Length: 266
Image (cartoon, rainbow, N blue to C red; front, top):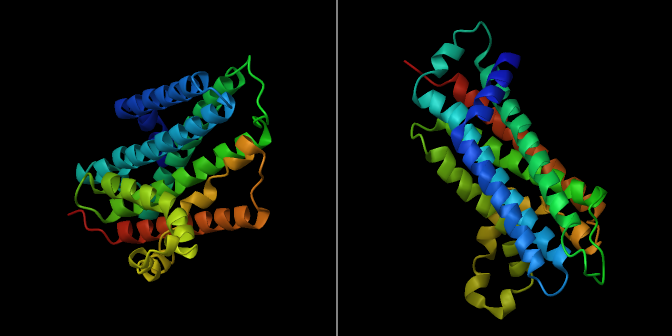
C-alpha cells in the first residue's frame, strides 16, 4: 500500500493539469484580496468569505483531477495491470491511491490556506472593522473543514472510477455530487421553513428528505461564520457533520475496493 501511496504523490505533484488548478486557486485568492480592497465596509470579512469559497472550489477540482489521473486514467489505459502484478491484495491499490490523494489535498489545503491567511492579514490595514475576523484557531478549523469536504468528494469519485468504463464520468459526476452536497442543507432549511408558502416547491420536500438519506450535507462542514463573525458552530452539529463525513468516506472507499476486486481487466 505504501508504494501505491508514494507513487500517487509523485505523479500528482508532476501533473500539469494540477499545476493549472493550483494557478487557478492562487488567482481565486487574488480575487479575494481585490474583493476586500474594493469593499467599502468590512474588507477583511469580504476577502475571507470570497477566499474560502475559492479554496473550496479549488480543492474540489484538485480532488477530482487527482482521482481522474491517478485512478480512472490508469484503469482506462490498462496501466493499472502493472500495479496488479504486485503480490498484494487489489484493495491495497485503491486505498493507497486514496490516501495519496488525501495527502496531496492536505498539502494543497495548507498552501492555499496560508496564502489566504497572508491576504487577510494585509487587507484593510487602514480600516478598523466593527468586529474583527479571527485568523487563528477558528480560521484553521474552517480550512480543515474544507479539506474534509474535499476528502468526501474524492471518495465519491474513487467509487465511480472503480465502476466506470467512461474516463470522464468520475469528474462529471464528482462535480455534480459536490454541488448537490453543498446546496442540500440550504434547500432542506428553505423547505423546512415553509418555502415562503409556495405549495409547488413544498411538493419537493419528500424528495429532498429521501435524498438526505443517501447524500451527505457538505454544508455542515462549512464553519466560516466562526472566523468571519465570531459565531462558533454548535459543537454537536460540528461533531455530527464530521462523523457523517468520515462514515461516508469509509463506506465509499469500501464500495470502491469491493467493485475493484470484482472488476475484470481481461
